[in-house]
Length: 71
Image (cartoon, rainbow, N blue to C red; front, side, top):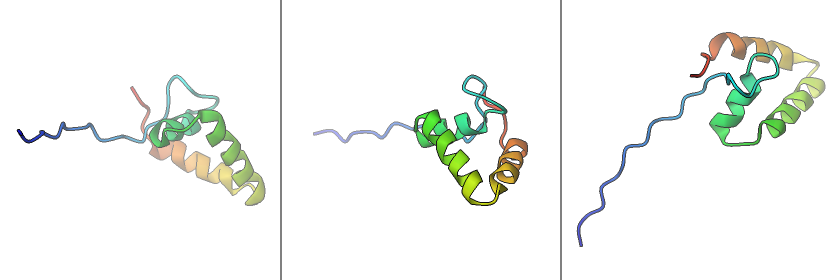
């Protein structure tokens, strides 16, 4: 039997979402990258923010500055 050739998959890029956004698209972009529902990511982010003395706000701002905006 012939060998199956491996198709090249485009690497995933972590970008902010342009379509699924509430503020800057960080949670929507993370959800797309992790292949999760955006609501799950937003709830996890909210819980993380509440239980870490609101350090999630700083993390969100850093990610907003570092993550490029998606196409």
